[in-house]
Image 1: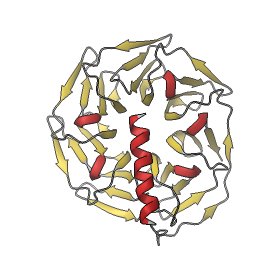
Image 2 (image 1 turned 120 degrees about the vertical axis):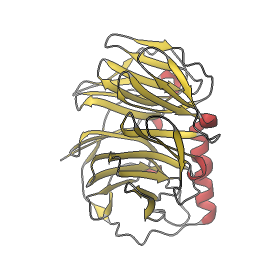
Image 3 (image 1 turned 30 degrees about the vertical axis):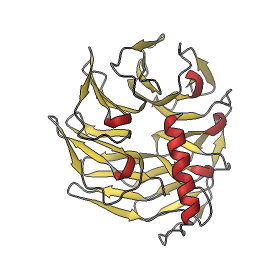
Length: 308
């Protein structure tokens, strides 16, 4: 729950500051996000799949759900820890990370705990392959898995790191509190200037020179291979709690971001548009098999599905 508390703390800042709506062209897009039956009331913080009919969602109390293309089913995780992130190289090679430093692995038949070597809260997981996986968490924690053991890496940061993504195992990005961004070139992690000082909650991209990150105030920043720039100012109405928590790309011109109060934004390559989600519950995770098959997860077991 540590990351959730951080997010809610950031939300209160937003409310107090009474930020105005961005001047970027954001309107209401009439689309069809459908609420799915998850079978749980636990918050769902992460979602990932190998395809649109092989999707995993993770969250509170060790909750792991699996979608087979028709139904979400609870899986036995073997833990009551809050699970914050999930990623896999295939449907039979999936990793989930927890509030207690635990890492779970699914081999296609069962989830089993792996010794991570830390008790720090872990928030995000991503890899270029099943034998090249990165995990990030509190106190600047970055762990790397080579297919055999998890080893701590020097992040040169003590800030909580919330998400990780890369174009390859030698071109990876992590984001965290106070605008923290670190880049890995295959040998070491170095600090990048994000241009903002707010908490960054999400990072994803289509290439190492086309990376997006979202912050606690709904700001979207972009990395073009040389520098980070703000491409959308805070997308938050005055007096409301609407931070962005997760972001996912189908391509550089097909981007989805989700956040508080059910807000979902879509970028078609020319402008960001607010989508009609049909819910006011907070959304934390987003992933899709394509830009026309996208899943969002959130508070109280919320799962939304977008198709077109």
